[in-house]
Length: 267
Image 1: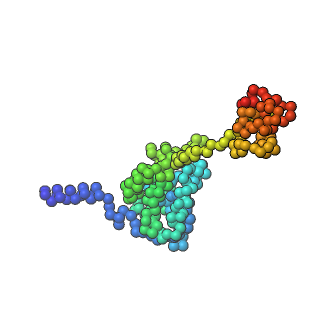
Image 2 (image 1 turned 90 degrees about the vertical axis):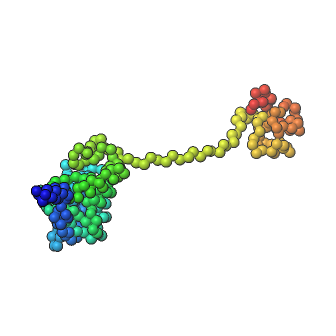
Image 3 (image 1 turned 120 degrees about the horizontal axis):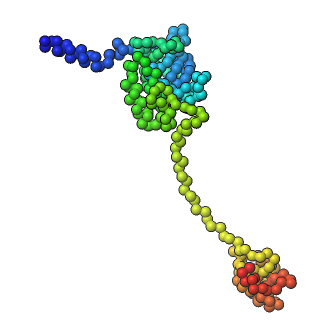
């Protein structure tokens, strides 16, 4: 009876823990990079044969479906995958369940320099966890990676409501396009403008009572004065001098036929 209990406990433990790698997935098979189809699909050469690989447990935005518009981050995901694989040493590994999908694509875990590419696409925010069938060896690990990318709001996670949390794929309506979040612009500090000296407003053609900035305050004669005050000045001006007002009409160096008027006090 005691031995039966021990056997039962061991049986339960083996059923709880996942199978070892040797039982769950195949050996790694070397392949050579050919091209990227999109963010989750790649063409490689196995021996002399070119085959198409569909990476397990991940899904990237759609760019090749003729029935659907190109989704946000679809093109970027393909370019990122191409740069990640192009110069790397590649190997692939089957899950020991279904090895091909209905399109004849090989369902694999892909490695670049021994790093799991499926996980890298999720980590960088270009892919979500998806395309889940019977192959689930790395499912929990990928879910942890996705949680981090989602918290950081990387790429596909930066667009509210874009990743379909109730099912597979992405929610995208081109008639009402989603807007990628952009960093808020840094407000520039306002630079105070230096005040500019205002020129005195005077009635043209008449002597002025206002001082022009930069002009001399005394003049030798009317010729010198008229370089700054072409129509002369009134008795209220700082540069007025009796020697320039020979007819004593309260105007100095004025033009002919001009007589003093009270409004000129403010001219």
